[in-house]
Amino acid sequence: MAIRSRAQAGPDLREALDEVGRRLGVRGMRYTPQRRAVAEAVLGAHQPVTAAQVHDRARRVRPEIGLMTVYRALDTLADVGVVRRVHGQQRCEAFVAAGHKHGHTVVCTLCGRAEEFTHCHIEPVANAAAAETGFSIDDHFLQFSGVCRDCRLKRRGDASPDHRSHPAPKQTSSGRRAGTP
Amino acid sequence: MAIRSRAQAGPDLREALDEVGRRLGVRGMRYTPQRRAVAEAVLGAHQPVTAAQVHDRARRVRPEIGLMTVYRALDTLADVGVVRRVHGQQRCEAFVAAGHKHGHTVVCTLCGRAEEFTHCHIEPVANAAAAETGFSIDDHFLQFSGVCRDCRLKRRGDASPDHRSHPAPKQTSSGRRAGTP
DNA sequence: TTGACTGCAAACGTTTTGCATTGCT
DNA sequence: AGCAATGCAAAACGTTTGCAGTCAA
Image (cartoon, rainbow over all chains, first blue to last red; front, side, top):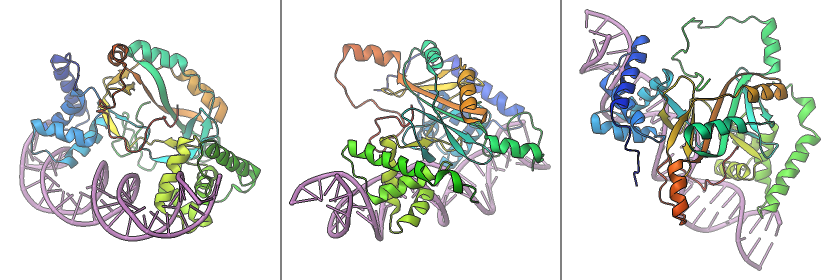
């Protein structure tokens, strides 16, 4: 098994790791050996890796690294955009009604309301993905988030100031940031 | 709060529940009161609901229902396409490297390999979703699955379907059909 | 120097077992 | 009547705390 590609272990990886340090540094975050090990574990893999798998891989480089450090590092790296979260079909956070055979969900980030969206013409996007990656695309998972009409109207009359308004550049490191704009 | 009185509790829901029974029946599955309660809990909500929330809701109708029955029912209902799985940004199954600011992941269902896909022209789809639902779309999560080039070539010469190479994250139940194409 | 980061262990909530019993079709 | 489906309890699992010590900037 382990047919992993023989192309990647070289300078590309090193360069990518340097980029990680740069992105951390810009935000005043530290590039510790543990974070480097975690970044190396994810960037060196050509597959989605779970936290436990990252832990295993990172331990080869840094045997004393703890699992919780891995969790925290992954969170940090996802925050700065170095790694991306991947979802499976089985594991999920919640369920919504599915009225149609094919459809997707749009979720309101303010009130949580979910609605179904059925007119999914994603073929052009899928074709572009196929062309770019060489994969044949069989399936897709798509989910939108935004603000529903009610919340938009409500917000118009109520200019609610942000609680912890930190006009930071982009993302706050506190919890729920958007994964992939 | 209960603003919902007028629109939903009526014939729509009943009809949808009948449809559930029909879909189960076609597959030789039983439409038990518990499954009906679970379906009612999800279909009656206008938000994504977790398994625990479904349990709470279903207990109003059927107080003796167990949490594990809810899990199994949700799994079944997702299988027949009555409910759809929803993912959050925080909770995820695994991580992959993210080379670019904006990008998505395509995963090979055979070998688990993941690649990045950056040419994401999803605006038309997002616009259609906005028009259909009345939401203003801020963000999207998109993930493709398919077969990578290597596996396609390999499969061409070797027609034996071997279950072995599945290094991808762990899959628990019989995960064949994707939840939401 | 300093405060961001790490490691530890125990707590936590969620999901899954295995099997006798129930009850839908 | 037969067999899928349920309920129960406990265990497995993945993830998150809280805090003192540590190290990168």
